[in-house]
Length: 397
Image 1 (cartoon, rainbow, N blue to C red):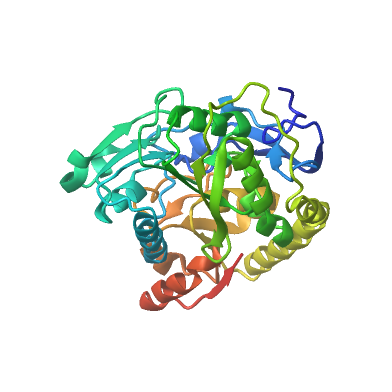
Image 2 (cartoon, rainbow, N blue to C red):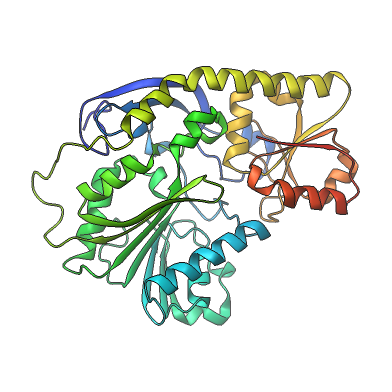
């Protein structure tokens, strides 16, 4: 398949609309020293939209540049706000799809927090698949009700025998999404009662907001509701429900396999338009939106620095790496990135080499401005700053 062929609908109507020449090839891999972080491999962004189905992809993505290992620290579970959301989602899925006592496979399970949460909510047995699994971080009390595959689907886990397949914030990391989702359908086999539960970012929000911090190398595939639903239908699944969650940042799709043998030979159906026109219109405005937003933030951090103040980012995540990479020279005005996840602290962000600090270090840093990388956490951050008696401006992306 050529780089100009849509990985979702296999059409030949990709049009590039946004480019960045150098971005870190990983945004959640924590580095142990600044030198290694600064020398981390870089890739290109060549973001294109499909005029047939509305799917958005990085045509310059090279999977050989990405690294997924136990040093990959994607967990959001240290946030009470996120834990509450995850608990609500697990409870709803267990209840809605009668998963009490059943078996669930999670593809791209990360450190396993969500899968263990499903078990606490009533799931009988969980199988997690991810190269970043850390068994030492799994609750020993439920370890006997789990098994873990330190690898990738389908290379290291070929057959899915389960009542539910969960896949959260993984599909956007996969380049050949059409072929990959068909492999999920094929691995399920003749069962049509297995529920398939996916969650991933909504590209329409990213495009409309000019959220350049949400476009980074590891995310090579971007979906709108329409392109996601179309992909599932073409891959042998019947969507049950598709909705936005988490302050409209995420898409959740729930589906079941349709009868038949998948992947079917020659099963390349024309893409339905869905919300394609909305995506294409937002893509046309994206660069100008990015320029306005980037200029605003460059001027903001530069002004604080010129006045002798310090700027820190709260959230040493993919958004922080994307934000710093796109700020260019003005990234030097950011003193550090703060994160409540202890596994990130005293380590360094790929590309710019910013050190990750714990919240308590802000007492000594005394920032004039804290930039929240995700507005969903603004209230939580504000409470922490108040508790530590740190007088600072707090603004969100």
